[in-house]
Image (cartoon, rainbow, N blue to C red; front, side, top):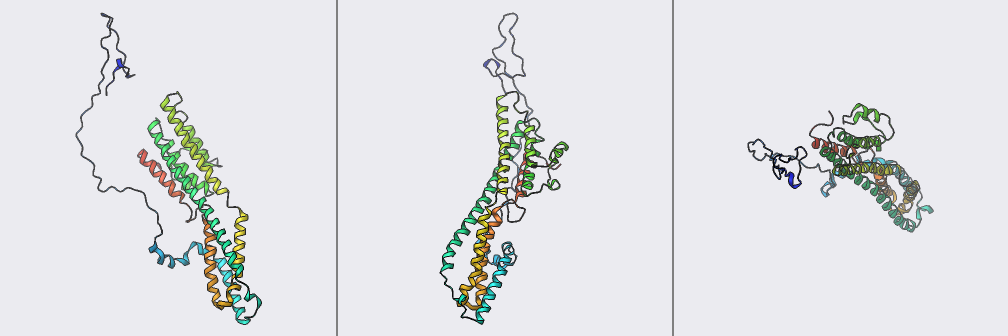
Length: 349
């Protein structure tokens, strides 16, 4: 590396050239500084033939899975959650079918099919709106955690490359992801949080309340000294790190909004009542043509209708610990792994 002091490229570790006492002129217009490095033996390219990298791809449905899905139907989570609906409607259909066998001329067995045909369209619209609104919440939760992953990586990278001692920022950033996931699921369990923290940090977390917010406050405290002297690059780095922490808090608030704001109960209750009345009266419309086979028809129709409604209930809150919700711990592990790769050592030790 070279430095030309007379041309404005000054190395602060080198004293300026003084004027010669004999002539009154500087001994040289500039001084050339050289850095001598010990030559090293040339190394060949590393062998990457056995490199294993890339993200793990989640399971996706394909058309070839149809047979396996049919055989797994008795173990379906949706079926288990709507089984009370199905049992009551099967009982109702069986009772109507048996009564029809005894007295086929009963007036209720000859009702018009027109009301159910018209209400079928309304039921379809209700279910479409219910499912779409639930999926919007699910997808928003996934986007928020995608933002969280990116910001945690950015914050840790800035800390490692710009701070003299980033040893607290990196583990606190990883801990924030784990604790936010537990916070959204309603129970913070430090026994399952693998990141090693200092005693004073654990005492701060032990105060309870909004634990992820406490971690964000500790992160702000750790970066407080960056750029305090007004150096432009350092100040810019601190501003960027503050923006990352602010985004973490924003993501936390948006996730809390999803958890604390369910789909309006009036809408969910009316949809449930509407479908229940529609299904209870359906055997009266079908029994005159199908007889006892009405039981199977009602079973298929109610399984489809209540199953679609239940899927909306299942994905409405994407942060539950159930298997059909977002895998928050997996996302935290992704952040944890990325930060360990960045610093080159385990964060659990």
